[in-house]
Image 1 (tube, rainbow, N blue to C red):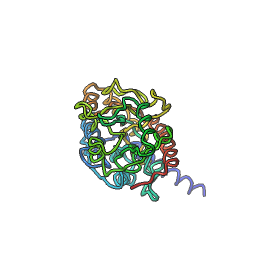
Image 2 (cartoon, rainbow, N blue to C red):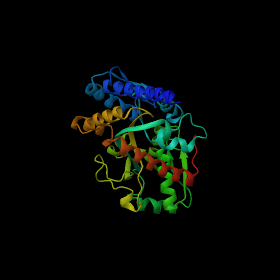
Image 3 (cartoon, rainbow, N blue to C red):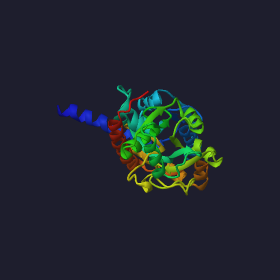
Image 4 (cartoon, rainbow, N blue to C red):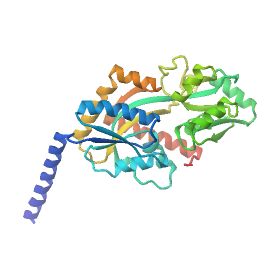
Length: 323
């Protein structure tokens, strides 16, 4: 019995030793970043910007692959099932780590158990926009307009269950206003109908709204982040206009398979933090409507836990489900 225990202990120690050696040599081959959305979107752009700099810092190739589908679940599941060695990473968003488990009856992975936070990279607000012909110049004006419509007001979203929909539901629930949800198959058709006057309001992503704001076709009433956006400094937050605690962000973060060596997580987190503090990186993010929003692994894990609680309450109260 004692001999068997000694052998088992020796094998475990050897395995730990080999793991430490592998972590110390990391990275000694190319790293793969999985983006769970199509090329060209906000998450993809951030991933490619980060991947290019991370490859330079680590002295290894970083390859970005798009594995889209099922609201981000396909790409996230690819990472969750990959070896926990730091060579397959996810650049993800709130959907696949905080929201989707609340919306889908069956998930191919459990983000709380199968993925581990590495770092947060960037964040962008949603912006509450109305057609420039709207009489509303503030959230209070908008609420007065909604009440005047006697239940006929509506808001657009890019699809059921996403941050835009949940922002609209938060607004509806807290204001107790009669607003109908009009889900679209993506942000582009929602924006088209807002510009055409078919819908009353839209919690839009900032990048697609900016050209229309600059052209005077839309008016921004509020941003959904806790602080004002550097790109729209004159636009107040929802919290400033009576919606205390209202905070919904389109953020991007890096995740790894659960069980990835802590030394690898620490190395990646440190490199990512340094990259996000570079002026050039920040400028490129701002050109995409985002800002650096670094959190290390520990802070990011706690942040994601808070996101799950927040969205859990919203989904329960609104009855939102996946399309």
